[in-house]
Length: 614
Image (cartoon, rainbow, N blue to C red):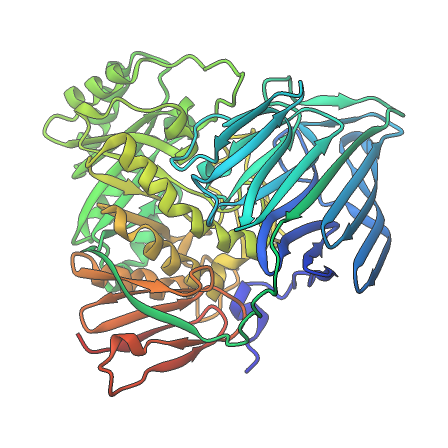
């Protein structure tokens, strides 16, 4: 059955289908001029090889592809094209590309030339290694000086670059099969993209310690080349891939308690949230997270509005404070406490972090001026006496990993994630779910059993730690770092949110916040915003379900293909979600007595609640 594209994605703008390239046992998808899902005998070797141009806010250009030429035969393929970028002040950049592959070798060459000069934060290749089956495994790194280091891909997420000054990296793909990725034309280094919830290790050109933005001089050719070589020492016949596409689910070992569910309320949306009180009551979240940022112009009126919303909410509330730190923390926190008291607003908890810590401090950059966090937390305990104080980062795990907070005096730690920091295509966004267990395990490795909260974590980006702004998106396209994303309106977001909850389930999360109540990040659309069902976004269904399950016991499930199907069991009910845009057949017979069988088909981004035997 065909489902309307708007119902799935919140937009009828379709992604361009990739071109399947095959050279014997080597295959790749060509999408927007770059290579995705490079496989050998069906096993993913590299997640992507891309030539990217980034602007001064780390936004990614979408170049126009011209003169595309693709040729394939049984044992090889070849691609040529020219990509053109247009920058500010009518500056221009043209990239000439040639991709060629045989069964054992793939080459991606690019030459960039500007007739005007061109400003960029990065211009060149990014190579993505997948994390599934590779995290923690051996790697051999060849450096630009010819030295070789035998090491491992990080298992716990590395805050800084695990490998620098790279010329090549080799890893095992299958027993008897290894892959060497050689990088020419500049100095490369690797960062652990799981910091940003990307499901990859990213090797990129131009070390971050060098200044950015920088300028490519007019008429200066910038040439680079990536060579992927497959070394297969096996002998004998290879087993054939199974044609069975049914995905088997089995009971897992993990058990725990479902987290509380929160919704964020900003001063800009507080009145709309109050008007939607009936829907708030229907969802019945355990927590409301009220956001307060004096640097954004929030003042005493915000607390009067917050008090009105809190009065119709049956659960707890937390005030999230982005502390300006322009005056002494004690002075600023006491002024906020005075305004709260005057408005009659008393939250159950305070989450406080210096405003400046929302911005990223990349490797090689100078840390901004900021009072010691111990001083900030001490001021909060004094100003908000009797209220639980939490800390961490109001931005993403990246910032928490790089600036680890002194948590001894905190009641909980918190951070957010965002899936469109680096890429915004459908596949990349859904793949970020793979990185979440690594994030939560890394937090637990750093902070032990400290109470732990995540969110608000939505597909749209609420704040950009890596540039001066989030990207406006009036046309509703799929673009990185956008403050609005069309998929938030569709079933895509519903599946993403349920997959998110499943992926973080075994981390013993105290509270999970996946949306706002209203607005562009919300469950309820504002006036003039596109929706599917009378102003209620499909995401509403998942948040309501998770809120009703809060505090109940769960049991984990093992999926034969977790990138496509995820599930968990709550009491006698098996909750299943399809993370793909295609129908998937599911075998859940392992949850029923041997005399019974169980199977179903889930549509695109569909979910189901199935009664199974305990």
